[in-house]
Each structure stands twice: as C-alpha cells, then as structure tokens.
Length: 128
Image (cartoon, rainbow, N blue to C red; front, side):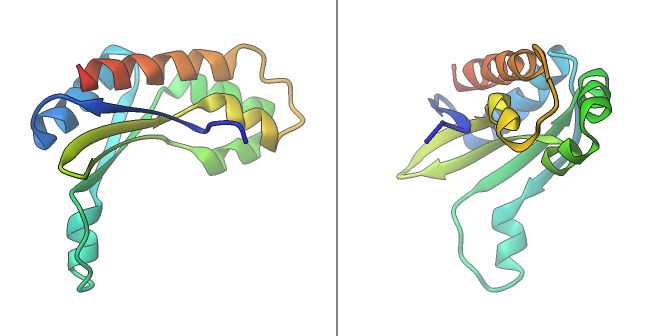
C-alpha cells in the first residue's frame, strides 16, 4: 500500500510544534484556515484522548489548479498537518499529495509533487 502520510517525531513542546506548523505553512504560501483541537472536541463528548491538533492549510493557487482538473478533489481539501502525542512523544504528520492520483483520472501533472514537497518541508521544519 502506498504511504499517504509523511510523519516525524518532533523535538519540543506540543503547543510550540503546533505554532511552528502554522508559521512554516505561511512561509510555504499556505494560509492557515483552522486549527482543530480534537482532544478538546472529544472531551466535550466524554471521550478521553491524547493531545491532537489538526492544522488545516490551503494554498489558493494550487487548490484552484487541482479543482480545475477535477472538481471532486475538493473532497481532499484543505490539506491537513496533524500534531499529536504518542507514547509521550510529539509527532507531526502531513498528507502526501501523490495519493490524489489514485482518486482521479485527471492529469495532475507536477501538482501533487509540489504540494508533497511543501508538506514535507513543513513537517521537517516543525519536527526539528
């Protein structure tokens, strides 16, 4: 099975890593649309869960280009970078956009690779 995520253990405090993801995303030309606190959301439903935040990011030009090629690719947007704790460690994980080719017949050209490389730089930077 093809990997769909790029994941690294991060050095540093959970909240600092979440902030790094947001800063690096902006440096890569992505806007930060939302930061979802999954731990807090689940706690409201009585479910105990590890610290977990989903950072939703979008590069408008790349998103528009993908949607022009196949409007249904919007189902995979915006991109997400997750920061969570696992076994006492902070982990950063982002989507590998190359998997999009598995869900469309449209020619996506270099688009998935461009998004993947940006996501990898965000994950690498946030985990350093």
